[in-house]
Length: 228
Image (cartoon, rainbow, N blue to C red; front, side, top):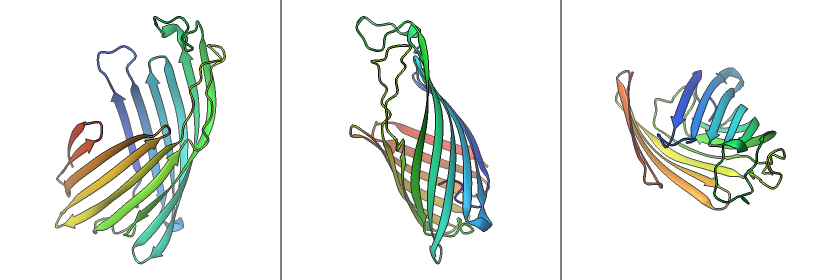
């Protein structure tokens, strides 16, 4: 889905969870996506930092997609991604009642990892016709190279295994006069049989406003609204 249309896209996101709890999860992310329409390609760059308690991850990702024309107003984009991450673990910030906990230690440690992802994304419309009704679907995978993540300077027995993550997306874009209505279903899968579902509904009136509703399998509901 890297720059699937004809526009350059940028975004920045800050996500803070569990307000009021020390060491609560926080995520900071920014990305830039640019289409190369004559070459049927697109490029993307993402910077991200995640921090949860004593564990911090800082990473940079590069993505590339090539679009195949399958016929009249049908496209299949094939994409790859490379991600480099630096992990930092601060054992001095941990408090526990069990002194034999494998994560306990008295030092800080860091580790670097390189990983890869890939995906496909199908749309039943051309890049110039995103204001027409269309169907879309995609499959993607991240962390294709699962492996161990250890901080030997902290405790060589503690292992944050990197696991395979899979994503699926399907939806339909209904075009109306000066507006559109879109529904989508997203499925997220992680190793050890952890599965998460999210349903999204969005309505936009061109050059005026947009609003959306999201429901997920964790019983969370989100209401989104914006003005153009």
